[in-house]
Length: 200
Image (cartoon, rainbow, N blue to C red; front, top):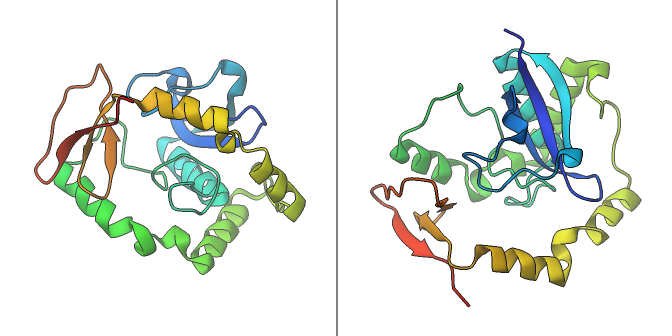
């Protein structure tokens, strides 16, 4: 059924910081997230009437287009390249750890300029004029403005973010940290250990 969509979470300056896929009210739900959704006026549904496979493919295309902050390829807070499995499926902890090691650092294909170009060309050719970014490129001036206006670089925002993390529990395997939400069952898989952010 074509009841899936792709959505963006927007910063106050209108730039996206997270891309996701979902159906029903997924874009607006807080449950099961590392960080909470923004206010509704900063949630943008960009593509609708998709099958789950189409939603996954488009989610990946948008993430490839904008790039991720965690691997220094762009502006998104997504921690993966998107398209992870079917709804409801959960990988075993050892599988997740293997994926993490396999795709981290210089092994991540999204760090390869040639691969980024191919992904962009593929997305443009497949989506054509359905893609709102088809044929568009950010100018150097726009990129500079994104960099200057990035709220996460403001000292008061950085301090607010730091304060929000104080005393939070997380698990780590030495490569990846996963925050444990208050309503989430605490499970520490083999090869992982429990940690806590500083309280001061």
